[in-house]
Length: 171
Image 1 (cartoon, helix red, strand yellow):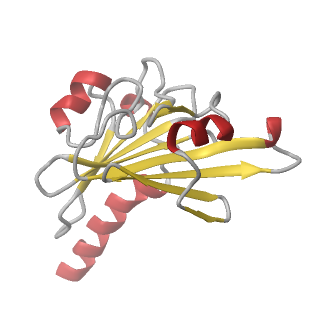
Image 2 (image 1 turned 180 degrees about the vertical axis):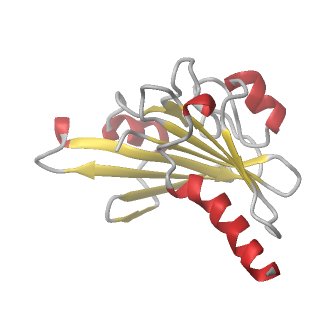
């Protein structure tokens, strides 16, 4: 019986994460959607501009482009091809590190690596999903904006500080 209840708890915690674009309406943010991370705007910034900001990627694997700058790892997933408007589309921007390192480690609204949960609330408000798996040293906050399919996934370390920010564009 205990095993069954543990399985149910894990499933109930993972379900919202797997359906990340379907937070309940009462948890969806209503303000201006966040579309900038590391100085890169999901809809406006072109790859050439990113190279001007950070240089050529340290590593490219398919659609993944990875840079390491100032102790922060920056990862972009860029779709390219005939069916893509303007030939390229940024699907994901992700930064990960231990401490803030300027523009590379923050959102357009000012949330940065090293910030706390209270900073998330101060900047984005209290409408979000929050998930913590048992026996894991981290937890995650997912912010989604109503009417706009943009999501900001914020991962905290065991000390409760932001260690990773992931901005996902519409699917």
